[in-house]
Length: 445
Length: 158
Image (cartoon, rainbow over all chains, first blue to last red; front, side, top):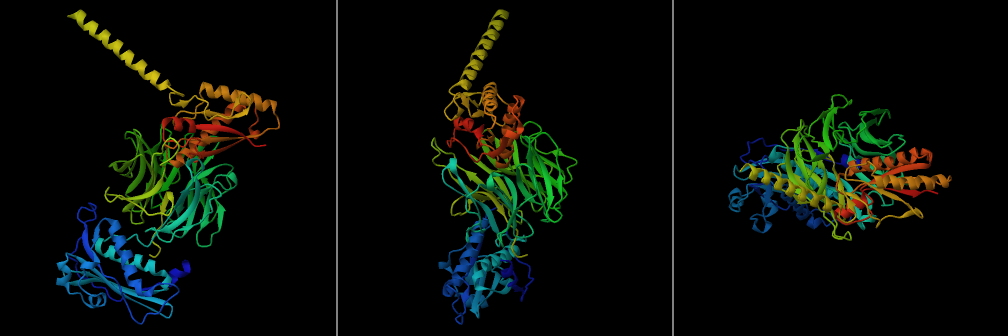
């Protein structure tokens, strides 16, 4: 995968710095999604076939992925292609703006591609239809098998241009794939593109695996495994498949997460009935004890500047969220609302902490400011937990379980996402039941 | 008038008492006391008369009277079988976050282990492992099932 990244020669050949008249309101969610027309990419007739990829359909396929990405944001309304008024190649040269405006489109995406000598060349343009101007354009070359990523990268560029925020489409989600009855659940590590494509299973299901988390700086993953019935935190390189135990602890380690620079793992270590928080430096292998309290301290999560750690403790009697300096000093409780709180996860923007709240038999996913003020509950359900942030801090992915019947029937676990505005709750497509999602950083920055 | 008011108060107290006692009988109904499971439905036996598991209240790892009685039987059995080692598995119900439940299961297993040790069983003979909420014994989504799943189970190793 790393090699494949090097094949990206992204060269911006045209930047039009016109002031866009289009405005996407990203602060309020999807009350009025922006109508956008995504024309199929024109396939150059000189294109050659390439290893089982249907080149003829590639332009349609790429535009379909872009369309799905945009629909999933809740901020955009991709228009039906039947209404499109211009052929892709002609529109790409210069759209007849007034015709596109007739179908109520405000933005238009056009593009073309060529597959030649084992390389895929793609270019696209984003047009502001009201202002009758090109907003941005980009061309790049890659291996044809990367065509889905091409669609995601184009989506990211358009999203950035229209919203002013970084995109999150060229990303992956690692999660736990679940199957079998509740009492004998088989769990495997699985990874997929953010849109549910390219699912791969990273473990066979022979041992219980839990809580995988991406390193924010590379494609390493940390997770918990019951390999040989010794529950420990592991480090996994998903490119090479090599893995190792993290540290040499004489008992269960769990709840791992990377520091924002990717150099440390913070986790809990349980000994003699007491769980405390530890870090291990991955270069020096130095282990540090961060909390020392007779209560359960777990679910640690670093702030993006690395200076603080939010965590979950029951030192007050029930689970609450605390924040401390990353050396363990200045521990402060931040949740005082009705109910109990778990799984704090610091936003990559640094301004919010996502959490799970339990109250009167319901489970909520919510966000609050890092001092605990401004709590907003985004979604209520029978059971849901474990929020993970999109890399731009705009969307949360989490898992939700259904209530089972008397024999365990009707039970399911699925991944869901929700915008931090509380709008646009949707289920992520997974091949199997799924839990414990973790969202990667952008694959190309 | 005054008398009337007093009578009203007395009636109120009687009424409140009735409501409260109705509550406490409801809580003891079936095989749950408070929210600790007291039945035998899921229990297996290390030997005749030696139950393998004890049950806990929600979010708690303290041992109930019944739990201590079971563990004393286990201690007696372990004293008689000096070559036997055990693992205590700690479990939680499904109504809590996964990571906290791993810690809670570990705390429950250790509560049982500590109690066995106070009855003279060497810590070397008792390993612990927490499964959190990963291995429910009863898959139902009911308070009864959850109470059966909040448990520590003593398992023979050899």
